[in-house]
Image 1 (cartoon, rainbow, N blue to C red):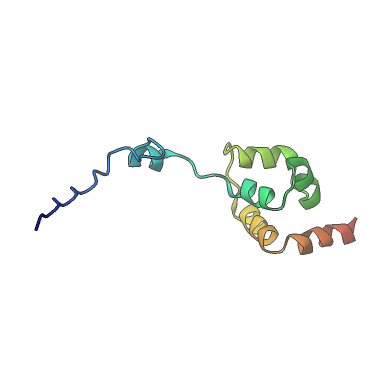
Image 2 (cartoon, rainbow, N blue to C red):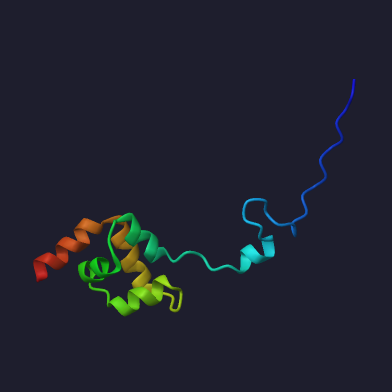
Amino acid sequence: MTTTPAKPPEDKTEAHSDSQLTNAQLARLKRYPKVAIIRLALGLTQEEFSTRYRIPIGTLRDWEQGRVTPDAPARAYLAVIAKEPRMVASVFEEVA
């Protein structure tokens, strides 16, 4: 009976085969901004999202491009939008 040699443990500094980035390089990358994920999941343009949820377009762009991180109240508001987008939009429709 022939035995196959055990595969050597993976070197954590090696590049990932699909991305060609090392673990250290991956760790330095910024995460995709959550606000863009929420907006894209709702199928809205930046302008539509900005208008619907009363977020200044410049602020939205800064968040999405990673220039500025939303503060705690803004993150809470984004979490509510993500969970109940129609409810939040309807509140603003009633006020308008």
